[in-house]
Length: 102
Image (tube, rainbow, N blue to C red; front, side, top):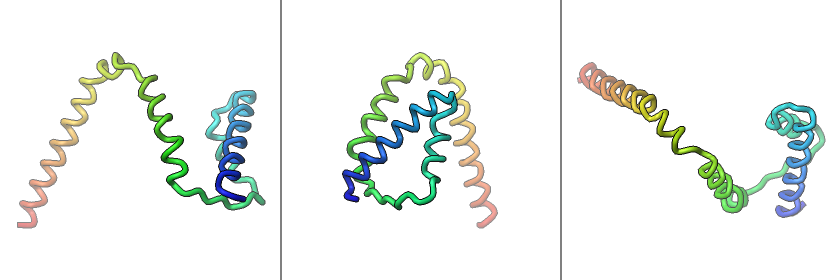
């Protein structure tokens, strides 16, 4: 199969499995993984450019539009505390490692 034919086949299979997951009321990633484990399917290799250029930007764009700035702002204090904790531990571990080595 050519690249475009295999891409169309994969998209159709993913759409069918997603609809089947909706009917069975199970998370769709489970059926996508199980669909990839079917024996006898040909090994399809798609170059990363084929995925990154046409599919990744719309997915990121839709995720950016569906995220809420109010939710992000509400979690700002928690995230700041986590980042501060991680950075202070990184500084401490660097300082301790240099003290032990020197």
